[in-house]
Amino acid sequence: MPQPDLSDLNEWNVLVGRVSGTWDRAALKVQPFSEAPGRFAAGARLCAEASGAVNSERRVLEVRSSRRSGHAWILDCGLNTAAEAAAFRGAQLFVHPAMRPPLQEDEFYIDQLLGLRVQTEAGEDLGEIEEVLETPAHDVYVTPLAMIPGHSDFIARTDFENRVLVVRDAPGLRIADASAGSADARSEDADEGHQVEAPAGGASGAS
Image (cartoon, rainbow, N blue to C red; front, side, top):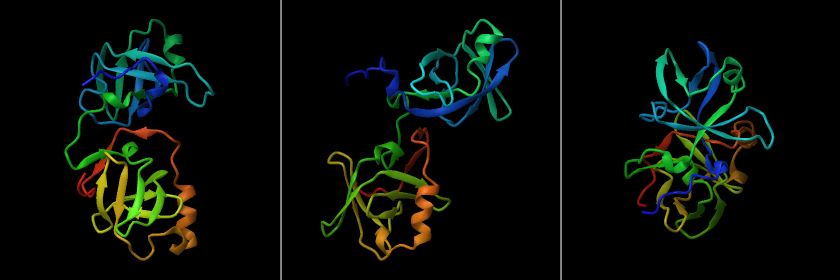
């Protein structure tokens, strides 16, 4: 399998943490968004981007040593001064999609769903998945025409090779059939456009 090209830092788009402050002289205190093994261990590479900046320069940091402190991580990334570390306060930390751990056969990452074309078993086209809403019960896959619960009652099969998600037709599946409140919730709950390193799956059907 060819090795992925990691040189384009704009492709490092999987959000795994945020720098919440500094520690000691020049270490970073990080709020983690990922529990992937080794994600913040010595040798790990993280792409830092200043929070809220437009067209900001990204920089790859390599973790020299790390330790857990409550819910946070303390990372020594080889920064030399307190001022240099303070400049990363609020920065978001990303990894390349190819750096995520492999998943079980019935699991997938949320960004793999984005762009899948949704069809009913009868062949009706419901558009492409534009976003995934996370709810306590299950994820909801949103297209311009439908909101599909990520549950085996609704998902017939997922064909990642052909980029198609086949769903079982059901009342309320189409946005036109849903209540106005559900449509409003779609816009209110939309995320900021970054994928967090958390797998989904278990109801994807045959792939």
